[in-house]
Length: 265
Length: 279
Image 1 (cartoon, chains in turn green, cyan):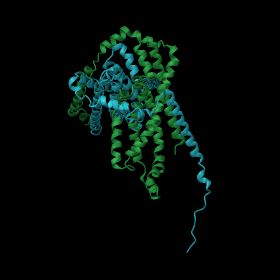
Image 2 (image 1 turned 30 degrees about the horizontal axis):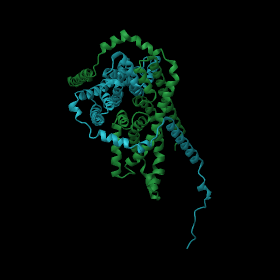
Image 3 (image 1 turned 60 degrees about the horizontal axis):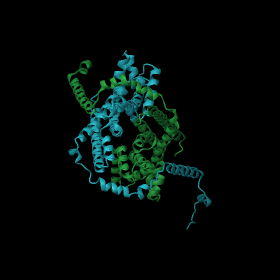
Image 4 (image 1 turned 90 degrees about the vertical axis):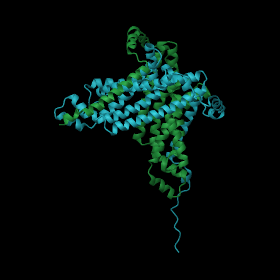
């Protein structure tokens, strides 16, 4: 009789209630977003030939775009180690087994706050203080990674085997020695692997944030859009896709290599 | 009284000479640091600007404090922007996730109807993940104009790439034994998927869906800054009109919004997964 219970009214009631709530939510969300599929398809059909201009790439700007993309990648390359160095300090302060409670709480709260703040918001605060440019972009990226990396590592440090720490303390090791010889060797592989992954994430984020801060390929793209130079825009998008994909491949390759060769023990 | 036993003598220069491992490693770190410093010099990035131009932060504090919390009462568009950002993320996650789910079943190795289709879809996912969503949004703004609709489309398309991969990996890692068992008793292809694959992947799909919502709220703010409307646009507006007290108030609102959305999604997720409401 499992078939009968499968179609029980109670079950249907739940499902239909869920679907109704979702439908109402979708209706109001569509209203708030002014979703108008009919006009979208109409304009796609009548003016769709605009998109052909994207394919007509402006190859004369290739070198310019590649240089801008290099700036974007370098932003991420600067921000990631900066965040890694800062977050290891915060993580040590925020780990239960080596830090004091009154030290741990503020470190954990600031990490949580940083994770909750989207990096766009951090960027705008930095722009408000320091103006447009490389500086706010790098710091927004670094602070964005800091929350995530710091939490991962603080948790990683808390999971470290207590016995090795105790052994070092019992042999008369100081706090710093127990960090250096008890904790760092155990968490280092995860730290480096996560940082490389974070680099990949940061390249994507640097495209977006750079566009708002006025540096790199993201800015080139939004400028080409403002100038309505579609060929230029297409070129920028092509370069972004290639560069982001290459960074993804690099990050996967480097992480695989580090894990396999075990060069971090 | 016995003689004192000393440990075997260690050649004294063993302490002085750094080991090969230490030397290669410190050489690597030194090289890495030098490269970073050079990169910073090329880009004109100076981290110490934070210290010696700290007066900028003080100036900002003068202008931004106290935050203008009254803008919720005075600006009628404030609530609308909050609603726009949340709605964009909600719709993008819902529709993007739904499309991604269908495509993931077509792309996963164990449920795909044909290998060629699977590789085509997987490559599309990879392409989409490499395409930043603000580029998609700018392209759609040509068709639908500036506003939250374009951001919704961009978030939908972005979610397809991001979560198509996650979903198809979840489907591929399903235990094949129950599926074999279902197929053995004569189930059709769709029945195998319905009773063998879906119950196994549903928890991970649901939790990914909620995770996607969290991610999409953040990217909705970034997209808004490029002309997608919502909170992101309010940030740009506050920054361009130098209303830094508004900016700071928005920062607080965003913090509260994200923290409370996280609470709600945690609550719903644990309810749905633990109570098995979807089984």
